[in-house]
Image 1 (tube, rainbow, N blue to C red):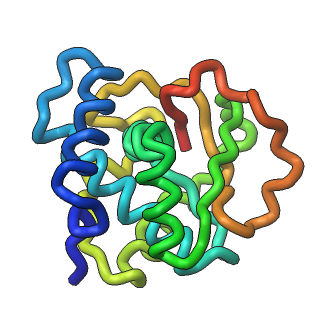
Image 2: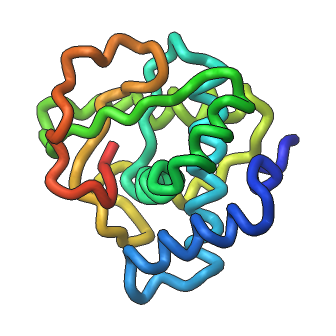
Length: 162
């Protein structure tokens, strides 16, 4: 099994975790570290399997957004993984929700060699962790045909819902 935190330097990880805690008042540092670790696993899986339609859970998307805000770190991470993983946020819409996307994403993360923290991969109505996220992803990752999603469809750039 891989260790996702090893994808970043200790300083880089600390900075991303701080962004998650800053964006989510009341979230403890250990939960923020778990969120960032799952986001790293998601990005790695999306880079390794660009043809698979993947999406983060609402909680994991919070960590992905924090990674993206550290632009140099995120660009270096994606370069090291061999594929830039683009972010395509959408406004929440239950009619677009793919009930299988999280199962597919978790299986792909496991295929990439990670153990998954299942408490952070719940659907939009079952989240055990509250985050600032207010958009969703229908299954967009690196090269999975997301060109029709318009930039700016997310209410805040602070998060997303599956």
